[in-house]
Each structure stands twice: as structure tokens, then as C-alpha cells.
Image (cartoon, rainbow, N blue to C red):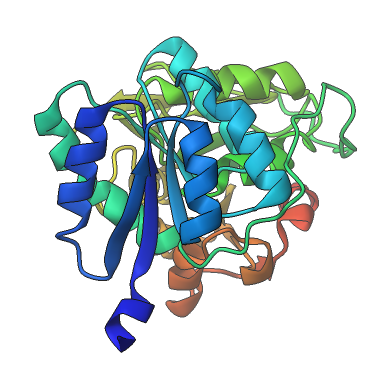
Length: 348
């Protein structure tokens, strides 16, 4: 009975019978996770949530009868609970997934096309379920501000080349944390390089969405792209991003390679390249997320003379990555997400 009480109770909401079946089978093999039910649409899900009281819900957002976003809004209002969105890799699916994160979902994973790959993805899903299970979800959904609504900080940066660089790494909960930082940046901000753990396709939509609400230009990275003032560059899903330098100019290298801490792109890969290439001319910021990716890279940045910041536990969705960085002495400052942009701009 004691073991059952410690299990994480999961409800799977998906209109695909195959996905429901395979997720149930695979997650049931995972220690500490119990699939307490499935639902083919939001109406059935609503009744089962009330009756079964799950700890975590996995939610397909493209469903019949009621779309997932409408259901998610209702859920966040009346019964806030950690929700992991399972979305297709289409352009539309990526946009919907990002909207779900802004409404209150805590994580998103891509929906594979075959039952075999669904089984493989279940291991990743299990890790995310464990990470988000004890999150206290805010019942007030987030909303994307229109450009100019956020308080944009005044910054004296006037460089025309990237002589100073801000680097950000994040995972679970990171899309909203990054939004908080970048919407506070002025148009002439120092260049910002970002690794957010996110599937391919999703990073394109994420960059486009941020670009529509931010003063600096925000875009997904291209190999060889120049790093310059007023530009925010996001690593593309499934590719590592590194900082390189030619003459006086910085640029990014985009490449494949092995997963690092089960991630591609990896925060460590970016941070370590910045430590080697930019040294003390950088600020490293590690945000909310599960796992250890970025901790060692942030330490190398600090050892190279860079200023380093970790998001504090209170403002994190998941305190895993910042905790690991703090534990090894990589973080010079530990501060709330609402103060990070101001701090970074003042110490760079």
C-alpha cells in the first residue's frame, strides 16, 4: 500500500488508440509510475480527472470534440495539474504546443509516427513525468505579451560586433523563463545565444513567436550565422550549437554529434564553446530544467572569467539544472527569473 501511494499517477489523453495502448504498456514498466487511466477526448478526460485525481496528465492537443488547447485552458482554471503535451512535429503542431506551454503546460514532447517509435519515446516521457510530478501548477495561465507591453530595460550597450555575449541554457519550464528574459531586453541588447531542450521543428516556432513579441531580432540559428548586437539566436532542435570566432567576429557552428546528457542540443556543448572562445567576455545563465546539462559548462565559463547566473529554486518549474550548477560552484549569482535580465545587462 505504501508503494502504491508513492507511485506517480498518470492519465493519458490521446485520440489514438495505438498511442494510448503503447504508452500504457511502456509506462507501466517504469518504476514509480502508474497509468491509472486513458481517455480518447477531453470530455472523457474531464470525468476521469475528477474521479481518479492523477498527478500528471499527458495531453494530445489535436483531438476531436474539443481541441486540446481549449481543454487545457479549462483545466488550468478549474483543476491546475502538471500537463505534458504530446504534439505532432508539423508546423501547426509545433505552434499549438508552444501555445499550450504559454497557457500552463509544463513540458512538450514530439509525437512519433509509428508504434515502434512511440515505445522508444516512452522512456523519455517517463523521465519527464518524474520531473514534473510534484510541480505546483499556477492556476493563472501565462499569456504572451504583445511587443512593447513588457518593461524593456534600458541598456548602454552600443557595440556593433559581439564583443560581449549572453548565453542561456534551459529545459523543462524554460520557454516561459526565456520569454521573461528576452522580452525585457532592449533592441540594442548584447547578442544572446540560447539552448532550450526542445524537439526539431518546435525551435523554429519558438523563435518566431519570441520574435513577434521582443525588441531584439530572434531567430533559429543557421550554420555560420554571425553573432551580433540586437540578435537572439536559438539552437535548432536536434543540433548542437557552438560559438566560434574568425578575426574579430563571432559566429555559430551548427552540427550533429552524439547526445550529451541525453540531449541535442546540449547546454554544456554551447557553454563550453563560449568558455573557450569568449572567455571573460560573456555571461552564462542556467534556467529551470531537469537533469545536469549545463552545470559543467557553466563552471568552465566561470573558470574562464565569465560571469555566471543560476535561476533560484522558488522561480523554477524544475530546479534540477540550476541545483546541479550551484552544487559544483558554477553559479556566481542565484536570483529570481524576474531579475535575471536586469542583472545580466548590468554585469556584462
